[in-house]
Image 1: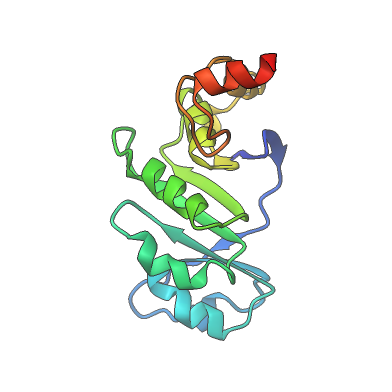
Image 2: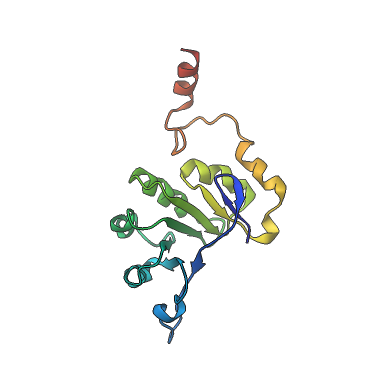
Length: 167
């Protein structure tokens, strides 16, 4: 899966570990430096003291569950299970409002037409399916040049953007 970080193609050094019935996190995580786990496994993963710790959440989770971990995790992956599930946008905005400055990655059903909006909500990394990525995908970030409302990337509404640029 192609990965974009800060609008650039990047290598993915993270390993997502999702233990199934009968498997242990400890056994699966042996030798993994950058460990990404579902939020339900976060306590156990932190006890392993990986070099880098990341967490994956989805729209069923609340930011309050994640808040105690914001200083410890270096990656938060927000899963979009289907195109019509927009709860990840709200989660990203809430996470950024809490002051999280690390990598905030959109994973799952992520498409080119969503990238600009996701970035405005606070995402700075995007994992796309192979069939949804092409070099043209990077143009998605600059296709919309005027934005009326404030967002995570620029909190000023359009009337403030214009008045401040002419002063």
